[in-house]
Amino acid sequence: MSYAGDISCLECWKVLQEEPDSQLIDVRTTAEWNFVGFPHLTTVNKQVMLVEWQVYSSMQVNPDFVAVADQNLEQAGASKESLVFMLCRSGVRSISAAQALTVAGYKNVYNVLDGFEGNPDENGHRGNLTGWKFDRLPWQQR
Image 1 (cartoon, rainbow, N blue to C red):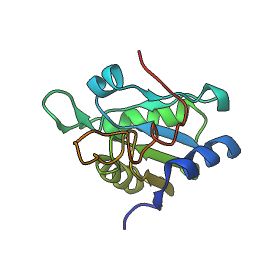
Image 2 (image 1 turned 30 degrees about the vertical axis):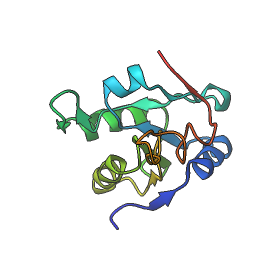
Image 3 (image 1 turned 90 degrees about the vertical axis):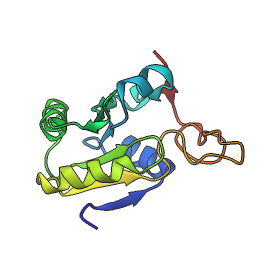
């Protein structure tokens, strides 16, 4: 594994509350943020960083991902030692993003298991079994 490891949504939320320099990067697409929603972190005095891992609509890997994430983290006061959590829809794309930031020198990058919407249920619907929304963690829509 080339990143720090995996963490549940609830564990991630706890760390975001307790560790002042911990940060959350949502690596889903602009369309997902606009139509599905995204984590809302104002109760912990933070803002989720929205940085596409794959650019909508081509779904090609964002060649500027590391540079944009690095800039966002720096602006938030994070360092290469800070705890950084990567979130996608279901915890798959965020692994690749976590690996990329680790290669870029970040020491404590974690993948958030089950992501924002989690795994699909027997009807193919997400958000009913696992994930940020299922765990009733704060989120918002535009």
